[in-house]
Length: 185
Image (cartoon, rainbow, N blue to C red; front, side, top):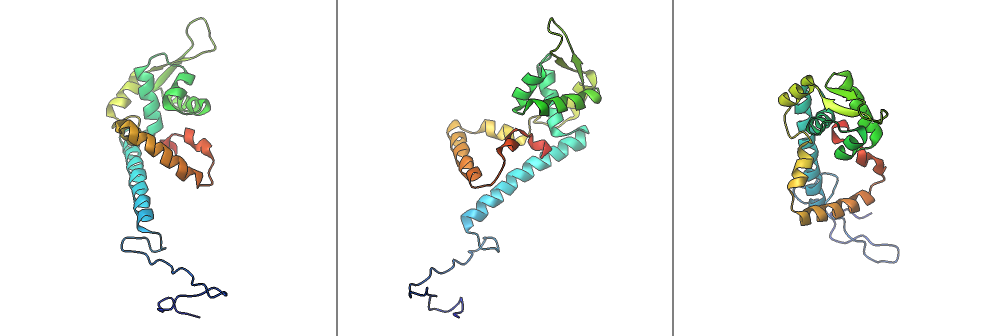
């Protein structure tokens, strides 16, 4: 059997040379992925770490999770919003928004009222305690990633959306995770 460092390339049974395994270049991971793969992987790590660090800081300073702070900020800014409106503003499913509302209500951060002619619909209002919590919470309330994405040029954002869709296509994943707030991952 030929040594990997031999100058003679390995051959298939029909004597066709096999392509040589590419050696990892400086900076590539030990498992042999190429420089571009390693660089993109490092970039994802930077993004995930920034998101994780922000939400840890929010929880340390506010005492509640980042998703609750974001929901509370929307309720404060849109008094009387309903659960469906909150779900749409957070870009999450209605049951997830209902869970956030329940937790914020149990902590007395919001009031859930039934006003108007349709007594089935609820209106959400921030309490004084909820507004105080927001004052001690670090921003951005929506998180660092949504803020950074909103600051991107529309062409870059469109290209990023297309490229991430291609990446997701190579993963064996359930796309329902798209509606789970990052703070809850």
